Length: 190
Image (cartoon, rainbow, N blue to C red; front, side, top):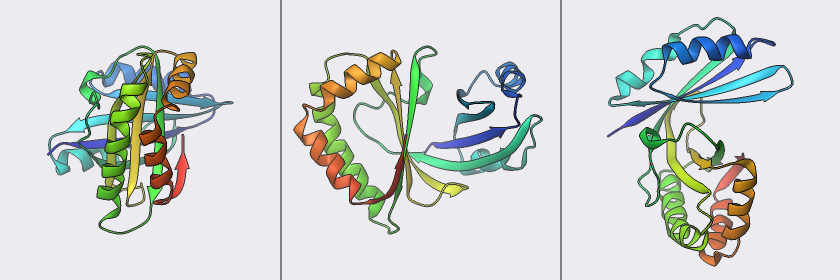
């Protein structure tokens, strides 16, 4: 089983450039996404780990230029069409979608089943080639609430993401899957 350490670094104002430079020098083996709103930045890191111990190893790291650092351990869900973090393109745009689901042992497996059934229809309907699912994973430990699912997509561009989204609306099984998933979720953000 593989684990993914998902880290969210909330940066001190004005330190995005310095932090990103130091991160890229140290960590060429992880997928790093940055989100900047005004002068505040959030940077998301995804590290693939082979054991739970490796995944929690960095939880106590203190980073310069960081206001707050939150770590969680996620486990990838097996769905057809997910490229995997190791195959993540360096260019383009990434979209991180987060679902906080109801508590319960059957909620994440139900989400996976609904998502997987709709995803096949979405991928067949969207012939733009501008978007690909990188990973679908659920929380196991750390700062993320239990039953949190992360969906990570790569798009050729922001406009490409919109063309892909428009094409996907024609996928009736995908639309139904999302409607059913909505009844499982307390919160959704992208």
